[in-house]
Length: 170
Image (cartoon, rainbow, N blue to C red; front, side):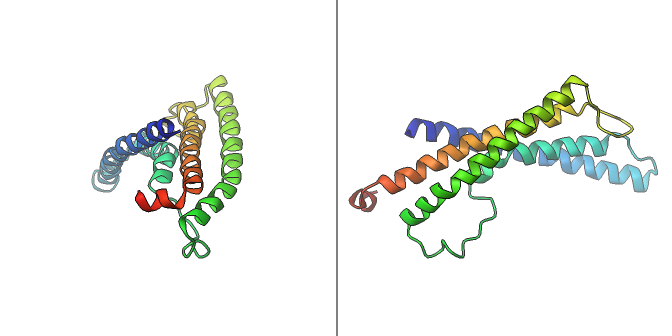
């Protein structure tokens, strides 16, 4: 159990560290497009499409990192005064909804990718780069998020099963 948690947490951590660097080209391409459009009066045909693809990669693949670092929005009105074990139990119960939703999204995302790949779908723009690589990010991101969800589930299970005297010693 601990090897899985360590491996997936490390994968999510490194995925997040790598993805954060995609913000640099995202900002640079946006600045270049603004310069070309408003100063040079010659907008590019590719900048918007590339920015969409970069942002999609950050958004879809960064879900596991956000879950690891507790970066998702939560409503903690009910849980803020709960002890660790009660909060872990609630997270285990609600994880059923998480895994169901991510499973459906991963399956539907895979079907969407396959359809796009079969017809060699292009983005609806003048430049028209292929759409299917970006659509592949949906099931891949769901898969990474599910892996991290299992890690969080195991951490919560460990919190519940840990004896109180072990908790004090840790």
